[in-house]
Image (spheres, rainbow, N blue to C red):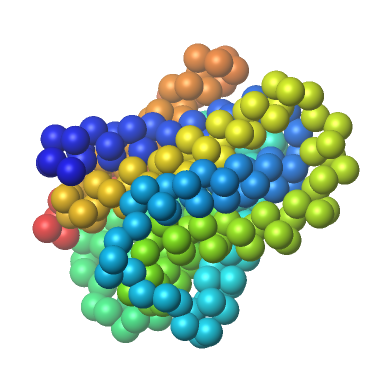
Length: 283
């Protein structure tokens, strides 16, 4: 893949990840059913993409890595459940901005778990992201839908950060698409039996949105991300993926009339600028 194509693939991947909340809301069902349906279609898509993007250097996972991938699947399922609960409670915009806190959790947990030195610029990024989250919610009141939704979204970001660090520590020799396939298989296996009564009652439109969520926002987006990282550095990719909340908010505004307040836009801008600034300084 050439550098220009890799850059295009990254932007498309960020757009697709940003559409996750949109497709989940359009499915108009419970977060449990959304996650189970997403896992089902993601497994189908990733099984295909694993064949297209397979590499000869990919090693078979050891028994320990299989257990670690299983735990990663539980973290992935928890991350999705928290995120779509946030969408259900507070809307796509707040859910997307709350989830964007995951780089801050990654910085803090990386220093704690891997005993890596945290730079002043990274602490500054955490502080700016925290300020952005404070601005996103009008007032800290657990009775408020916005506050409750933001807390679910921040939990989603925390679980995703834990998943990212687990993958960093345990799946270096494993093909990333195959690792994602295993983790999505865990999500599907755990949740599909519980969610099937709800899924069985969905109409064709809802199934269509779940299919788009699993195939485009999971299988294709993840595969594009993995393929582009063979050409583009991960820190450069982080700058592009910081645009994910922008895509999510723009589509939510257009489709659901979720017009962001000036305070929310300011908070979102702080979060995105903190991520971009941290990635550039880390070069």
